[in-house]
Image (cartoon, rainbow, N blue to C red; front, side):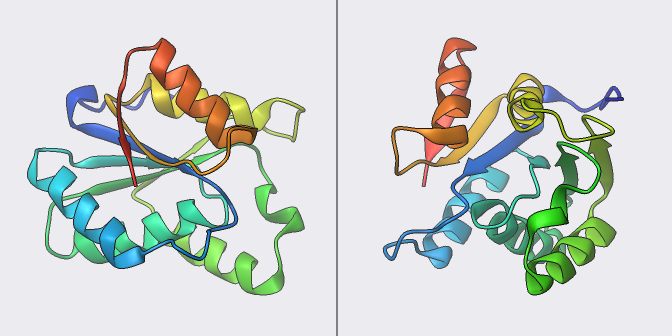
Length: 157
Protein backbone atom coordinates (compact mmCIF):
# COMPACT_ATOMS: atom_id res chain seq x y z
CA UNK A 1 0.00 0.00 0.00
CA UNK A 2 3.00 2.30 0.46
CA UNK A 3 4.45 4.09 -2.48
CA UNK A 4 7.90 5.27 -3.44
CA UNK A 5 8.34 8.85 -2.27
CA UNK A 6 10.92 9.87 -4.89
CA UNK A 7 12.33 12.43 -2.44
CA UNK A 8 15.94 13.31 -1.82
CA UNK A 9 16.49 11.56 1.51
CA UNK A 10 19.25 14.05 2.39
CA UNK A 11 16.64 16.83 2.33
CA UNK A 12 13.97 14.83 4.15
CA UNK A 13 13.19 14.89 7.87
CA UNK A 14 10.49 13.19 9.91
CA UNK A 15 8.89 14.10 13.21
CA UNK A 16 8.07 11.88 16.15
CA UNK A 17 6.68 12.88 19.50
CA UNK A 18 4.16 12.21 22.20
CA UNK A 19 0.45 12.75 21.85
CA UNK A 20 0.33 14.52 25.20
CA UNK A 21 2.62 17.53 25.39
CA UNK A 22 4.20 18.37 28.75
CA UNK A 23 3.65 21.72 30.45
CA UNK A 24 7.19 22.80 29.51
CA UNK A 25 6.53 22.28 25.78
CA UNK A 26 7.25 25.47 23.86
CA UNK A 27 5.87 25.79 20.32
CA UNK A 28 7.93 28.94 19.71
CA UNK A 29 11.18 27.07 20.42
CA UNK A 30 9.99 24.26 18.17
CA UNK A 31 9.36 26.74 15.37
CA UNK A 32 12.85 28.24 15.82
CA UNK A 33 14.37 24.75 15.62
CA UNK A 34 12.34 23.91 12.50
CA UNK A 35 13.52 27.14 10.83
CA UNK A 36 17.14 26.16 11.62
CA UNK A 37 16.53 22.73 10.09
CA UNK A 38 14.95 24.28 6.99
CA UNK A 39 17.82 26.75 6.62
CA UNK A 40 20.26 23.82 6.78
CA UNK A 41 18.63 22.42 3.61
CA UNK A 42 15.70 20.23 4.63
CA UNK A 43 12.65 20.69 2.42
CA UNK A 44 10.57 17.51 2.86
CA UNK A 45 8.84 16.64 6.12
CA UNK A 46 7.22 13.29 6.90
CA UNK A 47 4.51 13.67 9.54
CA UNK A 48 2.65 10.81 11.22
CA UNK A 49 -0.60 12.77 11.62
CA UNK A 50 -1.23 11.86 15.26
CA UNK A 51 -2.61 14.35 17.76
CA UNK A 52 -0.13 16.22 19.92
CA UNK A 53 3.40 16.76 18.63
CA UNK A 54 2.65 15.68 15.04
CA UNK A 55 -0.24 18.13 14.76
CA UNK A 56 1.76 21.02 16.20
CA UNK A 57 4.63 20.30 13.79
CA UNK A 58 2.25 20.13 10.84
CA UNK A 59 0.70 23.51 11.69
CA UNK A 60 4.07 25.21 12.14
CA UNK A 61 5.47 23.69 8.94
CA UNK A 62 2.35 24.70 7.03
CA UNK A 63 2.94 28.31 8.12
CA UNK A 64 6.64 28.06 7.20
CA UNK A 65 5.69 26.62 3.80
CA UNK A 66 4.41 30.11 2.91
CA UNK A 67 7.99 31.38 3.28
CA UNK A 68 10.10 28.37 2.28
CA UNK A 69 9.64 25.79 -0.48
CA UNK A 70 8.54 22.86 1.69
CA UNK A 71 6.73 19.61 1.07
CA UNK A 72 4.51 18.20 3.85
CA UNK A 73 3.92 14.47 3.50
CA UNK A 74 1.19 12.92 5.65
CA UNK A 75 2.26 9.40 6.64
CA UNK A 76 -0.93 7.73 7.74
CA UNK A 77 -0.69 4.36 9.53
CA UNK A 78 -4.12 3.17 8.37
CA UNK A 79 -7.37 4.40 6.95
CA UNK A 80 -9.66 5.72 9.72
CA UNK A 81 -6.67 6.67 11.90
CA UNK A 82 -8.86 9.43 13.31
CA UNK A 83 -11.55 7.02 14.54
CA UNK A 84 -10.80 7.63 18.25
CA UNK A 85 -10.00 11.34 17.95
CA UNK A 86 -12.27 13.93 19.55
CA UNK A 87 -14.55 15.90 17.23
CA UNK A 88 -12.19 18.90 17.33
CA UNK A 89 -9.19 16.64 16.61
CA UNK A 90 -11.04 15.06 13.67
CA UNK A 91 -11.75 18.48 12.16
CA UNK A 92 -8.08 19.48 12.51
CA UNK A 93 -6.97 16.11 11.11
CA UNK A 94 -9.07 16.42 7.95
CA UNK A 95 -7.94 20.03 7.45
CA UNK A 96 -4.31 18.88 7.70
CA UNK A 97 -4.95 16.08 5.20
CA UNK A 98 -6.31 18.67 2.77
CA UNK A 99 -3.20 20.80 3.31
CA UNK A 100 -0.73 17.92 2.89
CA UNK A 101 1.27 17.90 -0.34
CA UNK A 102 1.18 14.12 -0.43
CA UNK A 103 -0.56 11.35 1.54
CA UNK A 104 0.98 7.94 2.17
CA UNK A 105 -1.22 5.21 3.67
CA UNK A 106 0.79 2.41 5.24
CA UNK A 107 -2.14 0.03 5.71
CA UNK A 108 -5.71 -0.22 4.50
CA UNK A 109 -6.97 -1.17 7.94
CA UNK A 110 -5.79 -0.98 11.51
CA UNK A 111 -3.32 -3.70 12.50
CA UNK A 112 -1.60 -4.17 15.83
CA UNK A 113 1.74 -2.86 14.56
CA UNK A 114 0.60 -0.31 11.94
CA UNK A 115 1.74 2.67 14.06
CA UNK A 116 5.24 1.21 14.35
CA UNK A 117 5.29 0.42 10.63
CA UNK A 118 4.39 4.07 9.90
CA UNK A 119 7.10 5.32 12.27
CA UNK A 120 9.77 3.02 10.84
CA UNK A 121 8.77 3.97 7.29
CA UNK A 122 9.28 7.64 8.13
CA UNK A 123 12.70 6.96 9.67
CA UNK A 124 13.75 4.81 6.71
CA UNK A 125 12.84 7.59 4.28
CA UNK A 126 14.53 10.44 6.21
CA UNK A 127 18.04 11.45 7.08
CA UNK A 128 16.96 13.49 10.12
CA UNK A 129 14.53 12.65 12.92
CA UNK A 130 13.03 15.52 14.92
CA UNK A 131 11.98 14.04 18.26
CA UNK A 132 9.97 15.24 21.22
CA UNK A 133 10.90 12.45 23.64
CA UNK A 134 10.05 12.86 27.31
CA UNK A 135 9.25 9.24 28.32
CA UNK A 136 11.34 6.11 28.07
CA UNK A 137 8.42 4.04 26.75
CA UNK A 138 5.87 4.04 23.95
CA UNK A 139 5.89 4.70 20.23
CA UNK A 140 8.17 7.75 20.24
CA UNK A 141 10.73 5.92 22.40
CA UNK A 142 10.63 2.93 20.02
CA UNK A 143 10.96 5.22 16.99
CA UNK A 144 13.98 7.05 18.42
CA UNK A 145 15.66 3.74 19.27
CA UNK A 146 14.98 2.51 15.73
CA UNK A 147 16.49 5.73 14.34
CA UNK A 148 19.58 5.20 16.49
CA UNK A 149 19.96 1.64 15.16
CA UNK A 150 19.64 3.02 11.61
CA UNK A 151 22.28 5.67 12.47
CA UNK A 152 19.98 8.58 11.64
CA UNK A 153 20.71 12.07 12.91
CA UNK A 154 18.32 12.96 15.74
CA UNK A 155 17.41 16.47 16.89
CA UNK A 156 15.62 16.59 20.23
CA UNK A 157 13.18 19.41 20.92
